[in-house]
Image (cartoon, rainbow, N blue to C red; front, side, top):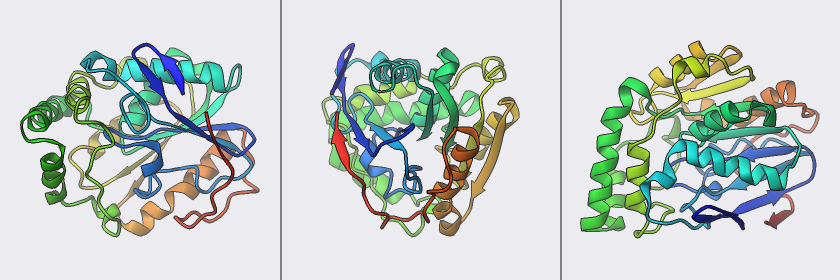
Length: 279
C-alpha cells in the first residue's frame, strides 16, 4: 500500500521487465478490467505490469471528500506511486474512462514519465460533461437514500454497449457505501483538460473507443484524436473487435513504448496469470 494524502493506494505488481501501468474506470477496480475486456496487459509478456486501484476503489482507502476524486488529484496520486515503483523510468500506460482522464492529466503534468498512452473509452467531456455530471449527482443521492444495491439494480437495466454484448455486466461498485457518494460528487465536478493544453501533448497516444455508450461518447474520442498531435483512433462495434484490443495495444506499446513485441501472445481471458506481488 502507498500512502498519499487522504488515502492508501493498492498496487499489484506482476512479472519483470519494463513497467506497464493499467488503470480502471469509475466505481471499478484494477482486477475487474480483464472481465470487461479493458485490461491491455493480457497480451504482453516480458514486462512488469502495475495494476493500481484509485483512491476509494477496490482495496485502496479514501475519505468522504469529493475534491479527492477529481481527475487532477488522481493524476497526482499516480505520479506519486510512479516515483516509488518506477523511479526515474519512463512507463507505458493504459486506462479506460476515468483511468484515461487520469493519464492525460498525469502526462500533461510530467510528460517525461510516459512512453505512450492507451486511452480506452474516453468519458464525457466539455460539451457533454454537464449532463453526465447531473447523472452523477443523482447517483450520489440514490446511494445515500436507497443504498448501493438499489443503485446496482438500476444499472443492470441499461443495455451494454454492443462491443460488450457477450460479457456479464458488472454493476456493483467496487467502492463502499460510505465513500461512493463522495466519489460520484467528485466525478461531477471534474472534466478533461483544456483542449489547448491537450494539443501540446507531445506523446504517442492510442485511442480505443466503442459505439452506443452515452457515458463514453464517440464525440470525446473523435475530439481527442483531433487534438492530440500523435494519436491513432480505433472503434469497436462488435465483441470480436473488442477482443482484438489487447493485441492492438500490445503492438502500439511495442512500437512506441520501447517494449518488445516478440512475446505478444493472443489475448483472451484464459491467458495464464504470471507471478504476482502485492505492493
